[in-house]
Image 1 (tube, rainbow, N blue to C red):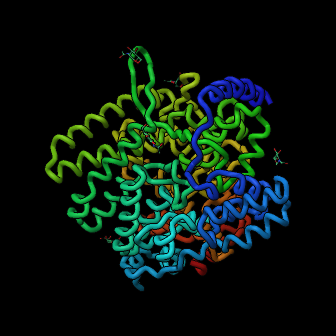
Image 2: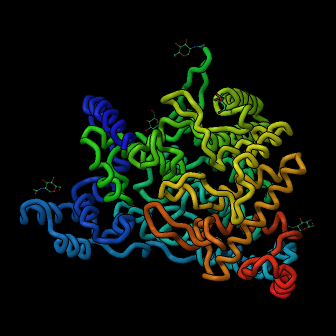
Image 3: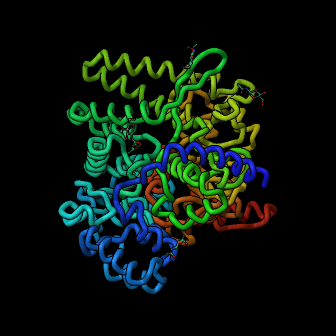
Length: 577
Ligand SMILES: *[C@@H]1O[C@H](CO)[C@@H](O)[C@H](O)[C@H]1NC(C)=O
Ligand SMILES: *[C@@H]1O[C@H](CO)[C@@H](O)[C@H](O)[C@H]1NC(C)=O
Ligand SMILES: *[C@@H]1O[C@H](CO)[C@@H](O)[C@H](O)[C@H]1NC(C)=O
Ligand SMILES: *[C@@H]1O[C@H](CO)[C@@H](O)[C@H](O)[C@H]1NC(C)=O
Ligand SMILES: *[C@@H]1O[C@H](CO)[C@@H](O)[C@H](O)[C@H]1NC(C)=O
């Protein structure tokens, strides 16, 4: 409770500040999908189990007509409408979500991509073929109506079809798409990847950055900036230098957004450094989680609410919504202070992007820009070394701007500089391995946990997420240390086992897994029920299956026998796999 009190006082201070400055702008201009009375009343009446449902509903008429009808109804009923009135109003002026898209079978999908042949274990190979099949379920194309009448939809039109994560996530998501694309490239679907890249480049042209996802209410927040890496992966498979040449300025423009809108200067030991953070200075509850954000804010005085909502949006921008990583002083969501934390992974991703941009520009013959990017990367590496690295503990850590200290809790993102190839010397790798051992991370049976804290949030223990497995495995696998390479394989084997076992039980892939149970289960916690599909989980599984196709097995899985029966267990395994 101490944390809450502290925030209460701080909130009063911030509230005064905000009072002087006035309210922050809403996340988009729409008086229906982003702000206004209609949104407030419908979401607070909780007409649907998930607030995202309402803001995904297309309008049946132009928005000004709908707003006018709502005003009139309000006037005739003297203010707030009853739940029944709201229900009727919504059914008359909106249609069900999802109808503005159609499922789309990717044209470049084919029956037997070559990577399948590289998986020796026959049951894993059959499962990999199922995962490859799932692309056909997750493909979506936006109907032309959305282009004709954009203000009747919250969906942002994109010209090319794409792969969605699945479940409640029926539109594109920015950082998810990177792992989806890695999987698609293994599935030999570079044409689909190019279309998705083009959609993202169009977003940058239009908004100056890539929104969190393909809905207007996500517009003013982004997600971990992986566009440059997506381009790099696409080029590795296609060598399409013309596409790079046509779009290099747009990649530069996206990084400009991070440079100008998301940077922070930090004074440390008489030197000034610049690094990046997640920060979304827009007001109001998140439209797609409106009632949850509004109810949480009711625990704070009026003046502190805008700042809470800003920090929640910042948490969403980080992709880790939500996690103890962003809480300062307690384990409660109310203490979220995303903008006061300099995250390791964001800076590792940008460090990698700067390196890639330097290479891209030099390939295209623009040596000036190539040098600029290299200089930026050098400065970032100095800053990361000075502020985020801890020699004693052998890892990087998020940096707290409020107290000038590192957060020494374990998160897989602490190892992201290795994954990004930003620091990969043998000495660093060895320290990182020791760090993992010191924290007993390699001892978890079903994968790398998101953190060691139990907060009830989905980006904390006991959940494990596919992209975070990749963040650890790839960095270790591509290092020069044989010990790290072996650790990477062991981690990949455990993760594949978890995914495979749960798939055998439920015939589904999930967005996250609970690794605290005996066999691994779909994950839980956070703001909504665990979702099936699932884009990035499939992408990471395909990557591991390909990288280690000759060594992975579907292992001990469903057979749970006492260890004294080991010979029998081994016999059964032999029969199963
Ligand atoms: C409508 O509800 C809000 C929130 O509960 C309240 O602040 C407001 O006074 C109500 N308006 C009327 C006219 O009852
Ligand atoms: C399959 O394995 C062969 C031999 O190790 C390798 O050359 C090839 O690149 C692999 N193919 C894929 C799609 O990973
Ligand atoms: C980025 O910063 C510029 C200049 O301060 C501002 O005009 C623009 O709206 C900002 N973009 C976002 C998405 O906040
Ligand atoms: C660091 O930045 C501060 C504030 O902008 C400035 O006053 C100070 O001179 C700078 N220090 C160095 C060493 O550049
Ligand atoms: C590194 O961690 C040690 C042990 O917790 C701590 O004493 C030291 O201050 C940390 N170094 C930095 C640069 O934060």
